[in-house]
Length: 410
Image (cartoon, rainbow, N blue to C red):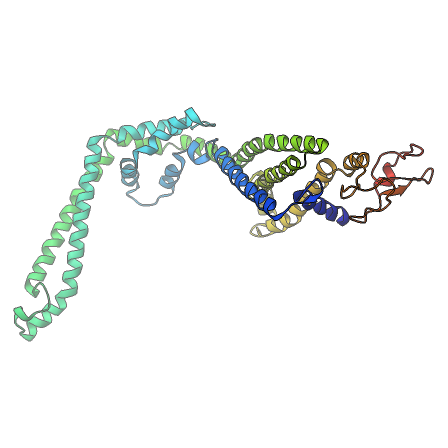
């Protein structure tokens, strides 16, 4: 196994830096690397764009987060706060669901569209003026509170100055003791008045017909259950959908690069073969990375996470142990696949022998050479039937036609 892995990497790096088995010069190598970087950046840009083609769970259920926050809120003023949020958030957010239905894959929740429509009716001019009035009064309350804190900080000092008989014009405090107490009481009365006015405005806003309809919609547990189930289902499948779209983006590029590479090898177009090989590698790199990313957040991770949670409770770090064992197995499978499909020794050997090339490194050798003068590889193997020397990796003996399958597998 290790010999095959070693041979795989030798062949990989050999193909990546040679043209017709001749090494690249430094200038050519730099140009190839720059081309690789440019194409790789565009591939990742395309993957990012196509991964956003399908609307995300948050976009498919835009009302879910507000609904969750409202349900989990314990503040007694939560009815007013959710109405205030609906009136003060950016209007651009409301136009998204219609845009998503027209230009992207996926469907926006009908419940959230209804929620959006009720919210739009709530955001009328009269209700906005009430919110502005409440905000203005709250600002005045904050200013009065700040003034009272300043007066309280200076009051003790002013009182000591008065007891000591210090003249007022020599005081370091802005307000005297008597006036400080008077202003403190007046500010406290004003704060109480403003708080009462705000309380009345909040009750007025919450009890308006549009607000009552909006709150009744939020308190409908059946609709919330539908939205929550839909959101959880969308969140479960979204990584798989992203990987599928990204694979659909990459697979045509991989197939075209592979076909061009095979064609260039047959015709011995060295430069075309080199570039197509680099493209093939570049297209595989993002695909492998996206697969690993999917394994961390996709269905498989969710499945393993749920099993470990149920069996072992809080010992969730064991998920990492499972992945440490799983990823090498996947890597081994990829290498085996590459050995059989991309770098199959049998298919390569047949082509190389016809062209009088080493079956291992593909460099030119003479017909009677038993060992490659470039890599030292022995070209022949003994036939188990006639005991004549025949070529390695070919299916049948060149002398007696006996099957070499068992011999090649060793």
